[in-house]
Each structure stands twice: as structure tokens, then as C-alpha cells.
Image (tube, rainbow over all chains, first blue to last red; front, side):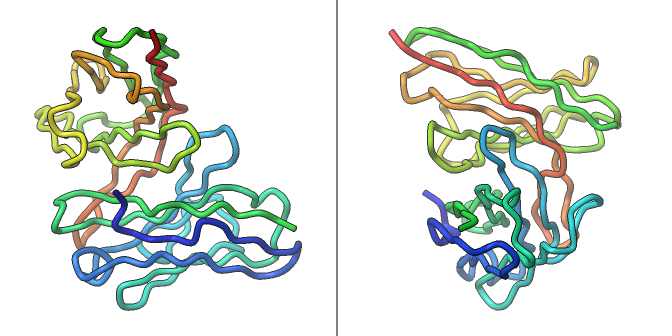
Amino acid sequence: QSVLTQPPSVSGAPGQRVTISCTGSSSNIGAAYDVHWYQQLPGTAPKLLIYGNSNRPSGVPDRFSGSKSGTSASLAITGLQAEDEADYYCQSYDSSLSGEVFGTGTRFTVL
Amino acid sequence: EVQLVQSGAEVKKPGESLRISCKGSGYSFTSYWITWVRQMPGKGLEWMGRIDPSDSYPNYSPSFRGHVTISADKSISTAYLQWSSLKASDTAIYYCARLRAVAGGGYFADYWGLGTLVTVSS
């Protein structure tokens, strides 16, 4: 039972910009806990994409960016490429569960 | 280079016990918590729990407490996930990951293992 809600699917054409939302509550994102994002390419392990709301690990293209406001966060992908087709998950800490939680996940498809 | 090497795929029968492993290298194993994440077939990621390898203190997600045991042996830089009695519903890929602490609270996973597929079937 995830406490972070994401749209099940999002799609976009090559070169365009898309955003993926992550909606939480006052016990996680709204409590000022950071949001992190992971990319899971088909058949592979998840990979850290964004940490601390908006920071990119070394090697992650600047086409990926993250933001947070209130009880929600967003992942933006610009200049869409076919290789961006993957599942994307947000993650934060929840004080009522006293532990980390993942979002429901979003499958991104390039048209 | 940080690496988390997980044990190989397992096929078990319901009721059997199992322990899978995750060996860390390329960093100080006792300086970072390790977490276990479940991914059932065609489903999303679920946080199972985490362990501090320095003192083997575990912390479980409410959904998994009592169903699995997380442990670690710092002498061989290895974390474990174990079941005493498997069920068909335990069929999933299990990932271990290294956790980094966030200043304001919580953790995120910066390095991941490749996953261990556990299949439970009669």
C-alpha cells in the first residue's frame, strides 16, 4: 500500500518535454522530507536518477530534473529520447510509517 | 567502484526456508545502511526494511515485519534476507541497495544490486 501516488502511465514524442507527478501527504512530502527518483529500464535494476528533490548523481543527463512543492513533487524529462522509456518511481520518508516509501510507479512511453 | 553482488536465483517449494545474500565491496560496508526491496511480477517497488551493518540493527516496514528477517555479517561485508516458511506469494525479484542518509531525515538508495529472483512453487 503506497502512500505516494503517481500516474500509471505517461507518454511523449521524441524531443518533447513531459512531467511525472508524485503526490504525498503531510506525513511525508508535506512534512518537508526529501523526494528521490529512480529509473528502471526494462529487465534491469532500478537506478538513482534524482536525490534530495533536485540533485542529479554524476552521469545523469541534465535532461532530467526534479522539483518539490507542498505535498507533491515532479520529475521533468526534456528532449525525450527512445532510451528514456522506463518505469519511474518517486521515494520519500513517511513519519507515520517510520520508514521509506516508494511511489506507485509510472510507465513512460516514447511515442 | 561500489558494487553490491547478490546471490543467484532460487526455486523453492512452499514451506521451505531460504536465505539470500548481498555482498558489498568498494566502500566501507559499516558506514552505510543496506535496504531490501521487493518487486513482485509486473508490479512496483516495495520497501521491506533496512539494516545498519555496524551493529546489525534492523528496521522493518510494517508490511514485512514478522514475515522476513534482515541480518548482516560485517566481517564478510554481507547482508541477508531470509524466510522461515516461504509462500507462493513470496515469488518476486528482491533487490538490495546501499542507503545514503538525508540531512532532514530518511534515506535514499544510491547503489543497487542486480536482484535475486525467488520463485516459490509446488
